[in-house]
Image (cartoon, rainbow, N blue to C red):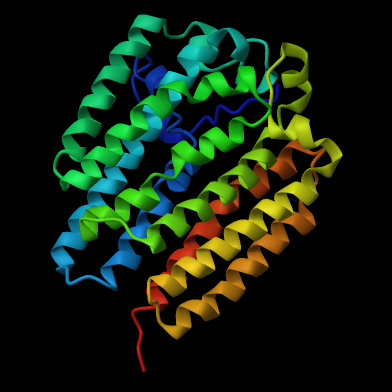
Length: 303
């Protein structure tokens, strides 16, 4: 059976009553944590190059975003599965998820959600006021995101708006304000997310069509490569402009060539009718995020 549950050795060693909560938070598949965290890391390091801030402050903000990404990605997964448990049971890839399979009930999921949101709130209020406001704005977006697949073929756009607030919050956590560089980075991440989540959605297009769930994969169909190419091109352009506006050093722009090459590689070798290929290319965006991170770090080098 094609499933997104990943049986990890470290999870198998945990008590049986704990394991369903781990799977509900998707801790067996940390790719979502990385994709949530990376825009924040990019923004933190970009801002750190332009504002007088101590290394200790940057280190604390990075640590807060790292823990926050784990907690809030988990919270988002719980909310998603609460909305979708009756749909998930009809989709091969998601039928074994804890709520769909009955391993956990809705009350247990809500208890976990409350704990995760409390931890996230404690982390959030340790940051400055602008960042707190931005963090609170994300809550209705997180809660409502699962509804979009029911009403529009563009739930990937809703995910892009929701998932990339770290690009704004990372900047504000360092600078105490926003900037055009942060705004362009957010827009670039928005297009990047539509692209990689369209690739991801191709895993479910047959089941989604049967149960009536909408996605850009269904909307674009066989033209998906062209659309994803456009989204990736827009993402690349916005990220490049954000580098310029942030005043990054010359070596950062050399790194843009590697970013472009990786995006091209994804499109070139993605087989949109192969589940494994779609998952592989989706996951490769963690590597892309690492390339962007290295490019930003190169900006600290001056001649």
